[in-house]
Image 1: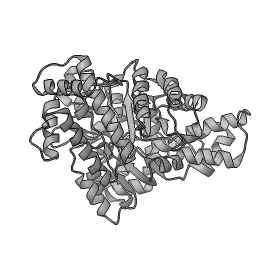
Image 2 (image 1 turned 30 degrees about the vertical axis):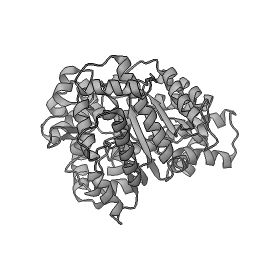
Image 3 (image 1 turned 90 degrees about the vertical axis):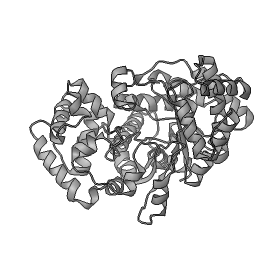
Image 4 (image 1 turned 120 degrees about the vertical axis):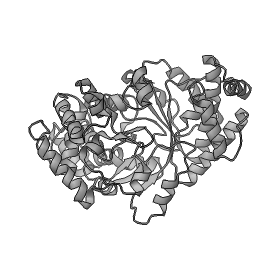
Length: 473
């Protein structure tokens, strides 16, 4: 994993070195804590920053990518998310990582060790104690190894966190007021709990949303939409540039507000909804949100084709986002087209970034985008980078080749971490290397001319500048 890691041709290596390597990062979608950024948290040891643990409220923090690697290697759950000794956890993860040949986790972890801790040899069982001691000493004593130090080391210009509509955004306010923070941290609007009328906890959540806007109850669909509008405006005042929607699949059952209201009141009464009733509510809420995003210049991100919480026993014990999700197979691209067409017809289609967890959707999304582009800006509708189970070397290559083949790769807004870890910014470097290698390969095979100004514009754009423009940073 030397300086030419992932760079298999001279042109790609040169493009990376001259135009990609040292650019700042726009991490427009992640799950890190603004509270930890404000407090400039310092981690006790590398197991804590890599593997996490349990919060005081019983929820879990950490990297479920790593947890899955450990579970797959037969590591007991106490070593994964439980209260085992931190070094024993680190040891168990190291032994698991050695087996991860071909897995991006192997690359990411060793890139993190190299960049932040100066470890140049691969992490193995034979050197893990020395790595443990060195990493922990740096985390505890090096001033550049606090949360803010790690962000600055990584040259992060913008961080888009993921925030619930009922969040007070207290920590965002404090960060914005802190003149020592020389990078942007902005909230992103994630209203899944208000959309998922069919899921457990919906009624309780709507009570919290009502309280958040100063009401005893949201009695009708009109009340719900008004509350969401109010919260979007609140987020916008705090610098919000993006929203995010984690959908199992994209639905479109456009029955109007009366049908949505009927379904909503039925749910408030504790009655079970049919799929059609739930979709009628969800469709109207999503359409309303999209219209507000267009008005407020907020990007609408849609992530779909994920089947979540498949292990019922572990979900009951640990809750969501703990490593028991998988790729789903959906047939909803037609619904997505109808959703976008309705908004386009009204003149209310917002900027959109579309992510599918099913790689067979790449060509479908890339072709769909071309139906709804606009003179408002280059690449108004985007296909998101290879996401979650797909942000592997071959997944990234497949996504970018599909985008290039059916759209304009040069307008792509590039990589994001989608991470809960402050060390995961090396994923941007991983992406940039793969990007430059693909472009270099095309150039050296005569499929694109070696025109320096054009290549510079493309590489710098995808690595950084397109996202700056797209998110109005």
